[in-house]
Image (tube, rainbow, N blue to C red):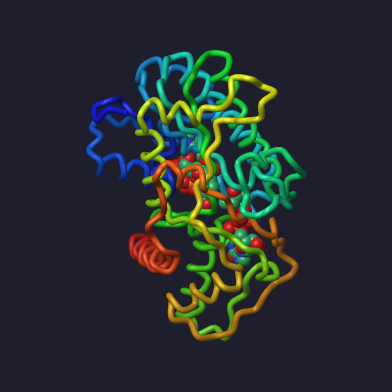
Length: 327
Ligand SMILES: NC(=O)C1=CN([C@@H]2O[C@H](COP(=O)(O)OP(=O)(O)OC[C@H]3O[C@@H](n4cnc5c(N)ncnc54)[C@H](OP(=O)(O)O)[C@@H]3O)[C@@H](O)[C@H]2O)C=CC1
Ligand SMILES: C[C@H]1O[C@H](OP(=O)(O)OP(=O)(O)OC[C@H]2O[C@@H](n3cnc4c(=O)[nH]c(N)nc43)[C@H](O)[C@@H]2O)[C@@H](O)[C@@H](O)C1=O
């Protein structure tokens, strides 16, 4: 990627797309194109075709998707599989048709089997059943990986799929029920502190383990991969032989995980909440553990910088700023 190449960031107002957009600006990239959801609905195939024909970006970061936490995935499975299949199919196909040179598709660690051995290596994809709450979303993401691989094999495209772990950071979705665990608990503990509530209820048993990566670190990893020299980038693009199971896939994780109880305790400390923690077993736990093996990207020279404690403090500042903006 050269500094003046035209780069399209899909989903640039989201958690991840926003971080990628900021990282590109910080790194001096001058020709970034972006559209809000209102300006370009990526589920509309002809609008997407028109956009690519007109703008002709050279590189694409695909951070637009229907995204949500365990509850949103459980109650809207049709929306998650439909929108994600449509968005990614339209972008990938039009990127190929208009000669995009490098494209990064963002999947998620939920593509791996529910009971995959830990830490999860890229090669564990499709080796076992998926977790139920997010199977439709995960299957769409697996189709995205297979699409990148298929376009690489059939058309010589150079599309790469990255699988980030659970993320958090500035601009997150702080909705009380549809969000991921970190933004949800930042809100809940903050409100409990303000109201003097004696306890905060946390969904599930508190025993599932999760690996959390700060969004600016993920953006840094995405730029790192997209700016690799051709020789090293080419090693990531998957096997030419469909029987050799090497998809164009790279895990991006933090390197260690915590239980949801430990996470809640950290958030309580960051916020200064001193009441009790209660657990609600009627809510789903989801996958028991999904710690990824990020050895492939580490071997290329990338590691994360922001610790979970620092990231949680920054995320809480962002939550408070978002509250002030809303008043
Ligand atoms: N957050 C996480 O923990 C993780 C995220 N990921 C992946 O990272 C990527 C980005 O996720 P994240 O930033 O968290 O999600 P967000 O919900 O924060 O952002 C998604 C963005 O996509 C846009 N978008 C959604 N639907 C459409 C559409 N039909 N047309 C145009 N734009 C659309 C949204 O716009 P609007 O809000 O206006 O609808 C929003 O800007 C996704 O591919 C996700 O799977 C992977 C692992 C973990
Ligand atoms: C990124 C990832 O995000 C989702 O998968 P998930 O890892 O289960 O993410 P989550 O953040 O929603 O929950 C993590 C854990 O935390 C517990 N938990 C406690 N209290 C709250 C709570 O208040 N909200 C939420 N959301 N979870 C809570 C919750 O019960 C679960 O055990 C998928 O959509 C999937 O598609 C995906 O890719």
